[in-house]
Image 1: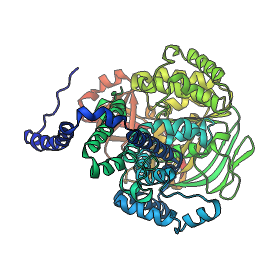
Image 2: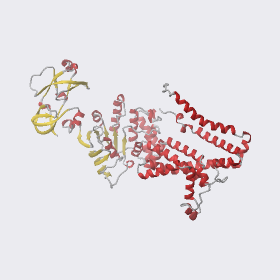
Image 3: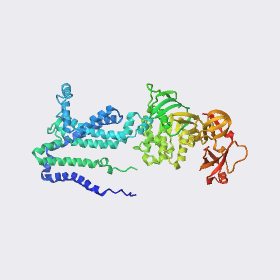
Image 4: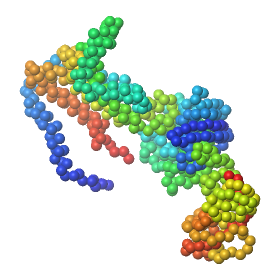
Length: 268
Length: 350
């Protein structure tokens, strides 16, 4: 059975097309500028491979941290409506609103050698976070986790708690009910949150460069490598951008069912 | 499992003040108007809502003693619940929904699934084992919900309007299934019903809840003999008049008077069975003490009779046979004479 759709107002197509073109033109610009002839050697460069691997490692680790730390936080936030939760929610939202460079600076002031936490970490355990691999993960997590927490909290708030009650009357303790009923039922929000957070972590620049610096092979992720190359060899910057573009496009394509609501199967 | 529930509990604007006992193995139907607190009462028994004072004892074991006292959470109460909208887990197939309670209690997945398959077999729904809950009709969903609750062999089963999810055509069949399941269930059972016929079909005894309080418990006969409220009388299908009695003259709230067979003084509730209201085209001769002319408001076909709603000063219902309807030309609307013997009224102080 085909259902007639309510037609769209015709004028809407003009601004819609302009918006689509705004997204298309930069892509064309990038693709026309790619130095196809030297591409192979630029891509095979050790620095490029280092940067790509580091970006993937750190963004995936940040995404895992979202699950390990962000999921419990989102769950706690969704569980009530008191002022403490409101304050924490503002704290969590701040990194989304702040310029990442401010976030990086704040992290440096907290975890740096002179910082509130950093001095004790250094003094007691000899742990240095800034300008290390861990620093990249911390900076990207700081910027990316809010997207995960807020998406998942919204999903958990939309979850009908009567299903958890039904599970309880069937003998499921709170942990089992959360694991086997709540989480599977909010899975779409989890997937969406994970994907946005990962994407945000992959593209993170400001907080990383401020907090972790740009050391080749240690903290220079793809966005930092592109920024670095832009000053000396613009061709390499374009090649690196192309790689990042391809990685992102492949991931979006693989996860399209979770990502684009139109391609999810309609349920009966 | 015997239930001893004497408690108060608040939920939103609803204040429950309940004193309810259920014997071991007994099935109790809980009836009451919308918003009376029936679902909340079930929630309290299941442990999904805490009480403010009093106690809940299941088989003499205290499961909720109010604030500060021990509270046994729902997962440890061994109380099965069938929810109004069945609440089957949408991400699990039917078989795993039924097996869920057993695996929650530590049974291996394999054994739990085997037990669930037996349940499906028993319900004649074996071919739905792999269906998703949203592929089931309302009646089928409710059957699975009952199986899911019973699969854990609870000591007490609570059903919240189990027939509400089924459409009219599936209702009778579902009621029959429920009847079978409840009869073969050894534990006690509390079922919230909307319809007196469902209550009679499923339960040994009826409790009526109004405004958070149990106003009456008993068999339909006991309820009909002495209904505690207008709601109970309407439920049983009796005419119910509320008014003031002086001797054997009852003055109804709207000013009409009737003569009743017994003498009372003060505020009373008088009931009269619709069958005791006789209708005539012309003024009847003879002995009935109450004879009055009334307009016909509506006629409604019941199982084996026609129920005629009269208007005017004494808005009551009369039950007459189909041939009487023809003889009286009742279908023409208009007015008829009604007669009620004084002795047909049952009068109780209110």
